Image (cartoon, rainbow, N blue to C red; front, side, top):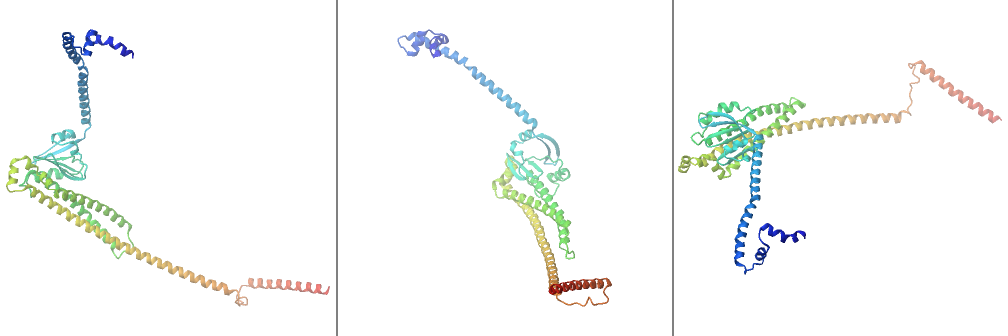
Length: 405
């Protein structure tokens, strides 16, 4: 209330106008035209000056934006300082190799990608982002462009021999690749798929003789008992075979997913969309999408063959386990039959013993009359007879005395 009461006094001071003029402006009195017009012009000027004075918050807002931008720059710099560093190995079309290190932020900016494109969160994946092919096969991470192939973080993975001896020759056309006449991305994809198929084949070739040898030792009819050490080895090999089957299955599913989508096949032909000459060749007669489909189907078939071989080993393991269980059941049946026979024998013996106990007390024996018995036993028997006779005589005399009385 006090503020409202003081408002008529404070408002003219603030506007620097007489109170009458303010009242005329408020009541829109038309009789005082020139003063009102003058006051309007002055009010307009005052409004502009006030508007100029009210730009202070805008200045503060701009300053806040600058401050916010500065803090975002600082936070971005902080995040960039802690970003992971990739060890990159670059292969060009001629097979030249260069190695360097790049932060993740710098790398995806150079490649025109986003941060999520270099996460490599799937075990096996082949994707296309911004005319870049991103491949991951477990520990192998690669980015393929129309001009080069980038292998990321190859250290501590035992890839040196393949990276620096075999891969450059394959990319330059000296290796045994059927896609050499095609653009660079075909050679890079074929080289990576061939390496992964060879890796899976090597794992299978190591497991297969070990499993067959262990199964032969377990199923051998010469051995009546099962060796526990062989069973432990078979269990470990079975786990390794299950992991191999999972890897082959994931590889097949990732390739089949691409084969089912024609758009993905078109996107994998990155040189077609970046090089006009390649696009003209593809439009003229050579269908690059069809060539990519044939390439992927070839390696899908190879993976299917490995899957069948692993499945055959799994069937052999299951059959051998069935045979082992049958042998164990037969041994168990033999032990149960032996236990039953022993039980029946002991029961028969105990039955005969009970019959002897029941009827042996009423049978007469001439052992006491045999002279071959020890003398001590005879003397003991005689002493017992004398005691019994004396007891009987004493009882008889006592009865006679009582009768006489």
